[in-house]
Amino acid sequence: METRAEVRRVPRRGHADVSTGVGVLDHLLRLLADSAPFELALEVEPGAPDEEVAAAGRALGEVLAPLLREDDSAGRGWAVLPADEALATVALEVTDRPLVVSNVDLTDQRVGGLGTDLMARFLDALAHGARLNLHVRLLEGRDPEHVLDAIFKALGAALGVAGRPVEHLPERE
Image (cartoon, rainbow, N blue to C red; front, top):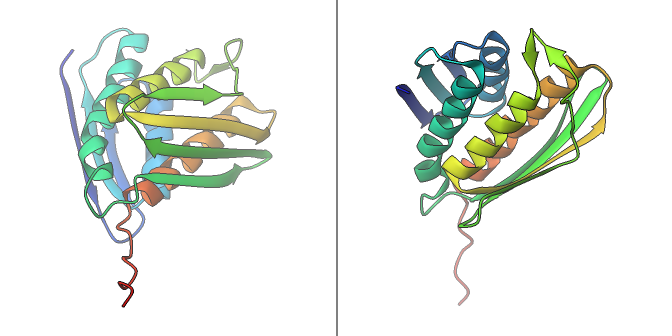
């Protein structure tokens, strides 16, 4: 599957130009970019929704990996953000053992006609593509759309913290 992805760090809220073929995922990626200081361009060749979601996650992870591993990048980040009644937290760290740990199970829910278990597939592909230890916690939330919005906003903010240059402390005399 042909996928094109680009990410660059910017000093302000980000912007996303995405076309994954999955409208719900496009919306969530725009929220992610808006919560992070990244300009994101992502285009996925049309295919089955599960393939498109996995390809988008993998491609985004692969282009984020170098940015998160730059010498001056923090390499870890966390955020807690709301979306209406939902509140989610995401903590992540660059690692050589990618992993997703989550208390969110929306497999029986459908958002925009899409099984939300595909969002778990996206997060797994992202974590493996960027080589992240990714923890997602839903603190509150009932509406699946709001839950996903909160998760992707928190994910974007956590990625923004992880990719932010670290201020170096002055050396001790």
